Image (cartoon, rainbow, N blue to C red; front, side, top):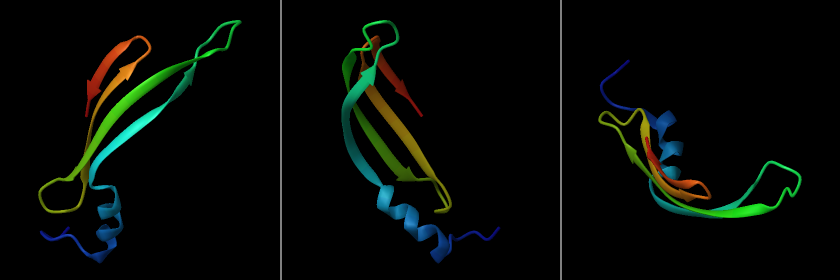
Length: 68
């Protein structure tokens, strides 16, 4: 592996930035009704430009979820 990412890594650049996500999750059980969720996803390059890191913060029906 070289120290500098190549042009093959550049398509990942389309994901870099902050994204807002909203949707509905289907709950298990007889009702099968949906419950809303909302999340913020952040993608950034790791040093070297080979990989992206994905950080997220979401408000799910069961509570808040944060992670990498």
